[in-house]
Amino acid sequence: MNGPERARFWRSPGLPGVDLLKARYVTHRFTPHAHESYAIALVLSGVEEFGYRGARHRAGAGSLSTLNPQEAHDGHAGVPEGWSYRVLYPSVEFVSGIAAEVLTGRGTPCFPETVTYHQPTVELLRTAHQAAEHGDDLASSTLARTAFAALLRRHAARPPAEARSSDQDPGVRRAREILHERLVDPPTIEDLARAVDARPFALIRAFKAATGLPPHAYLNTLRIMRARRLLQAGTPPAQVAGDVGFTDQAHLSRHFKRMVGVPPAAYQRAGTYKTGS
Image 1 (cartoon, helix red, strand yellow):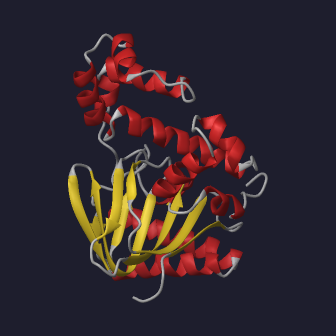
Image 2 (cartoon, rainbow, N blue to C red):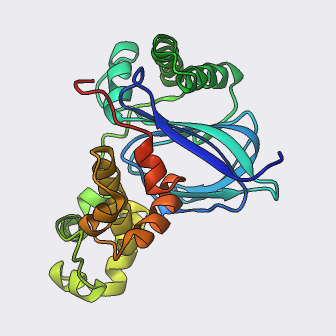
């Protein structure tokens, strides 16, 4: 691979509910974070290394990485020359809608395997991604549904019936609620611990065990999720920064690029979904 780092983030009218990224990274590092959507990555060249579900993974050329919503992960180059990839970020609603047609049973599907190599599935997803890149709405919508149906049939499973550990721990559950409520003016870890009747270090450990992130990283993930929605609605980045609790636009931009892969302005230029889609 030659040339500088580059990244393009966009949305296609033919794929409402799916964000798209095409990028090459060498020195860029994704900080630990989570998405509201799934993340389906196709590595074209090089190697991406990332932490997910308590393990380190290496995704090489021809691989398919499937990350579930709200699951913490990071990412960086696994070889000196970096990696290039295409990523689809389908919403839970988009995936669940297709799953309802092709899978039996109820519930939102999950992907138990993180990195797999199955060329037919990779090729279907790559072709759909390319069609969206070229602005072919009919082809991209048709190919994407075909690709995700194949992905679900081969790789998806139903989530376990038992509740997540965060739902079983009332202290962590309440701490999360407080961070959602106080996005702009968050408490200190000491105040947060007092509010949920826990000791600070014990809360940090329990919080990370439940969410994959310590409280401060979880808060920044919430802020970026909110920032994405505001940017899609057309709010200027400088205003978004204050609205989600960052000190200024530069502060927002640093965190945004570390989680999304592109700066806020580039993300906003990607456009918005069609009304009513």
